[in-house]
Amino acid sequence: MADDRVAEAIPTARPADGAVQAGRQESEAERADRQWNELMQEIRVAQTGVQILFGFLLSVAFTPAFGHLSDTDRIIYITTVVFGATATGALIAPVPFHRWVSGRSIKAQTVRWAARLTFLGLALLIATLTSALFLILRVATHDGFVPWLVGGVVAWYLACWVVLPMWARQRYTTRTEDAT
Image (tube, rainbow, N blue to C red):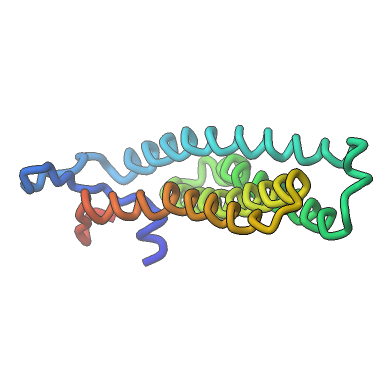
């Protein structure tokens, strides 16, 4: 069930007129290769962003302003750095995973594990972005509206990263038992 959500099924397109068209005609090996390539392209986008953010977070501790942070803000900073480190690790993990198992004829399983690690990395990226935004706005404004503003941004992330794709998946695709 969770594997079904993580591992991409071959969807059958449902055009506006409601007619159902057959999906791709590819072997299991071809499907795994395609899914791997698509996943690597997706990860490249997320990896770049998380690595830049993580690098920035690491440099903050060496600025003069860091010494003036309150204990609470330091805890938020440390939490943010840990989230950033774990997000970076999860989003990079599919590459060494693939290297370790390459040539073992388990590409489909590798794609599933890489997809899981990517989802985990994206969840940790949301946590990193949330705590970084929270820290920056706390330091910049010292205002009580910060948690509400950050909550609104998190809702936006969830709408864009979870709700919209799940809605589109439900609305525009069908799944059959033999498409997994």
